[in-house]
Image (cartoon, rainbow, N blue to C red):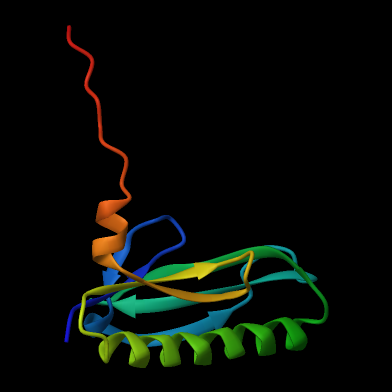
Length: 117
């Protein structure tokens, strides 16, 4: 069984084993749009989804975010059962969570080139 990481909205990585809470909140400063899904690890909160575009009543938006929160828990369980280390990331286009082996991410990382002075 490999390590499981969760990608944050700002492209950071949080070790899933350290997550103590997953919460949902209104993500936008505007009452009529948006929601956020946040994980808490090491006493700090990290946004994993921050969508200010979803419209509708606040109750509907928060219900949608809670379903994504439940799906994150299922993704974490699935990733824990994998042989390889995995990264869980939210894919806005697919409106869901994606599990990716870390070896795939490393293999497809473009090489860095450094300019000589």
